[in-house]
Image (cartoon, rainbow, N blue to C red; front, side):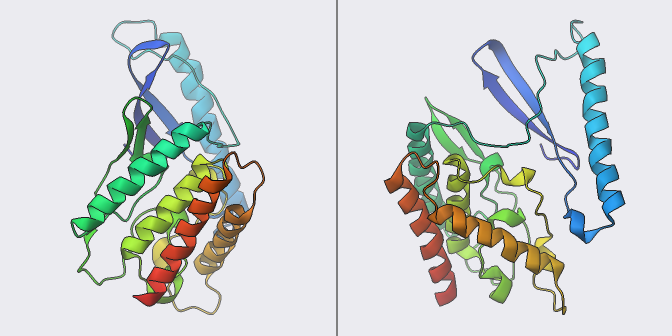
Length: 248
């Protein structure tokens, strides 16, 4: 469940006998550079205060049988994936199969990202949430989804299509391989719909260019890479997807 200030997920934990709910607080959905610095800082401070207040009060109440139990709370600024290399291989295999199947049915997902991939080692990875999906024959410029997974050619022609899904999966795999942090925790934020506006100084387009540079460097770097062949494959996914978009 996606809300303005939080992301609520269904989860399982080895030390919790029943299904749990994980609530992740979200930072403001815009770049701090696009608004007054004081306003951005106030929004971040407000989010932090809300988290502290919720944890403090909920921890006093969760022992009652009619109040949802609070198991733990944590804060992490890194947003680094802790999945092992074997699980990363499984995620890539399952998701490439899922994406190929979806495309084979004439559908584009348009919103491939970590939050839309469920993973359990015994079951594998499962692609969810087709709320922003479209048919291949649709020709409109799609502005839905999360900005960090949009391919570079969208800036030029607004095209995404099946290669855009492949590019998005490549970015997801950079996160899975610990090459980049969770994108939703990034300070770089912009509105997809603003990227193609014809303005002299387009802040959204400039921010997207900055982010794509980070993705490119991460895909080329071998720092911290646990499995070189897998990293090379992910790099190829990003490059081939961009070439295919240019050709369409």
